[in-house]
Length: 238
Image 1: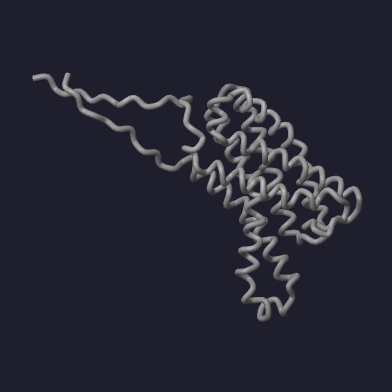
Image 2: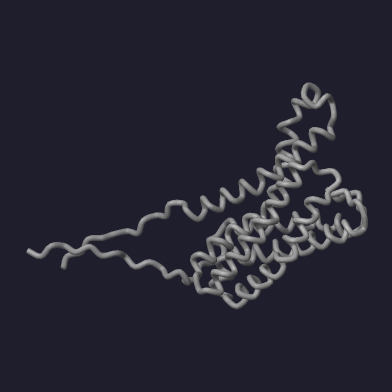
């Protein structure tokens, strides 16, 4: 008697077209990014704008910060486009172009971010180091990802660019974490901070600087290594 053979049901190829609405996270990703850009970018257009979170020491500092903010805004838009599977599958040329723009923009944006990290007159050294490491990792992950795609190593390219995108998006998470830490530290306002709101705000800012990019990197690693559902196996008679 012939033994049954085990065959695998065919699976959709990697390039199969998937409706955009099958990726429910893409809408909030775009919405949050757009709200962040509309909310924060205009505050850095004018010199010494009172709405800016970074206190400018001089006009040179303003130019560096503003240049980083504008380039960072472009990189955030490109980041959303790169992460959109529907766009990558249905419009690969747009995906390639926005990817190149992302790399070209990150190069100066990360360098400016590194310099402005240590030019801040209000951020303590611990926060400056955190921002400096973030800028360095952002640049390195982008360059490594670009090198892999140039060598045709697309799986490695995808992994490193996801890390780069996570670091890029960490600035958005940073603003959320500032509010969370401020609320969390508020019971200590009188006992630990002696009633100083400025000290509490500084600690909240430093904590958010470090935890935001660490959290997004950890999430990216989880996203890449999470367990996939195994393919179904069916038994058929020979």
